[in-house]
Image 1 (cartoon, one colour):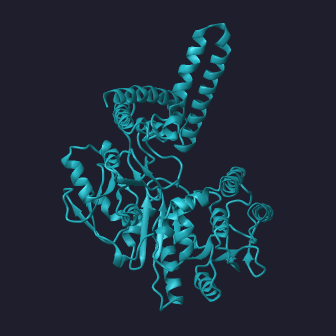
Image 2 (tube, rainbow, N blue to C red; image 1 turned 60 degrees about the vertical axis):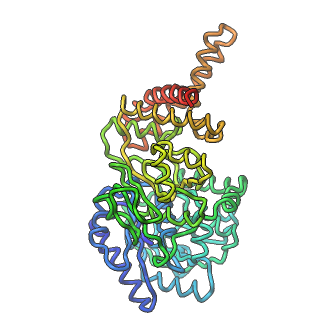
Length: 521
């Protein structure tokens, strides 16, 4: 499994080198190379898709979500009894993979991992990074009781048991995913870990340790400790979530795909048929909204959930591709904000698998019988999930894949879409007596509620004026933070400047639409 982001002109040759090296050392084994393009924007995915040969699979999605997300995506899509992680830049010799595998098999390990601190490792490593690495590993040893000298090397081999039981639980998407993988696995009893030597040829542009990367890594590490030791998040999630990983190719169901044309080449699923209508012969139907672009593992990630006969549909988070016009970019920032009216898109990955009773389903993998019944009843995509829930049918939300689609632009198209969504959610809330509501929706409406309370306190008189001012200042601070986050996320100060007023307009529209939908039923 090879995660890559903007691999450049050498990525195809590097992937072929990895494949050829491993295959040559394991001639009697069936080897597949799963390359995950983590939102690459330099043509990496296109190059890999055009040149992929036998034994090479390519999964691409349109937003950069971090190496941890890419590793999880690739591992869950893999079919082998053992999974190897190796970086695409060839800083680490892929010839180590067969050696690591042999040790793991012989000693019945859960992990065989590379270590820069192994006495036999050959590493040209700047002193500042050596010191930072040592300090970080001491922290991990203290927090997680990990008897590992180096968690961070991008060369690991782990068993199928780890993929099936640990990978679905992981939440870190960027800086501390190695620590989370090993810490959670050890906590669940997968603690047979062996460190092995590596030869590491770095291509540094500088020898310093970026302060922002260090801070983010420490933040993610603290979050892992908090979830693992305090909240017991992974234990609870393990009890609730028994997600199946991708079955072997010979056991896969054929899936009918509706609405996908030239985008079909990006889907990493071997048994697809492309049709124009939803009354296809296959039991599973994947419906793609116009202009939407599903991640390469969209069908692969959704299909295992249908082993449960009570599951009628699987939906995935919507993300907005980078590089869209400004008006759409600001609309995307609102929708992906925790304060965006209704929070209809996701900004935090990978998040949790859960059963949902209300979710937009313009793009969905669904059982053919359920979809035909909904069409006969005249159910729109906005209400499909709620309609299924009313009939006792489950819809699973999985953040292990995503759908990229540019949103309606500001101002009028965006507000119209917000109003339509709010009316649908209000109607569902009335029919379900509030069971469809979520804490995320309540949080997204906090600034609007705080603003109303603050204005009311100001208008009430001198005794409550100071409290009203404080509430409005807190509300403004929340909007300011949201704008700064949007500026960083979309790499645009203009987006950060326009996002707060757009959030306010969206919230007011959402409140109005929700109340109207609730009254109308």
